[in-house]
Image (cartoon, rainbow, N blue to C red; front, side, top):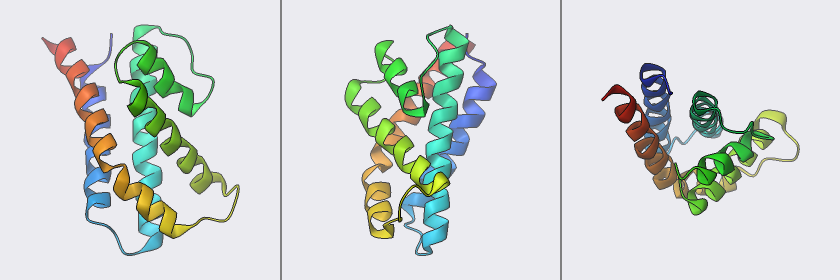
Length: 131
């Protein structure tokens, strides 16, 4: 069973990062940090839901969204988009390669709807638990 208060706090954090990204920060480092933080919030939410329900342990951050799709929390398209976001988060955190800030800006703008949808779908889980 999810902890509704913890889930709401995580979703609130995701919504704050969503709003920062929606304002299209011009500072590349602020944008990078907002993308990284929004991605981490989605990962934290996914892992909380998975652990609370006793579902299989994800193999990596991206796999957490596959697990949620397996249990019909999110659809497969959203899971694929959030797996890509977790990959971008890893690039930003671990600097595996040169970072293309134009790409980060494009992906951040394109992913806003996904972040909003994920927040809405997981917020429903907190509501279900508190009813």
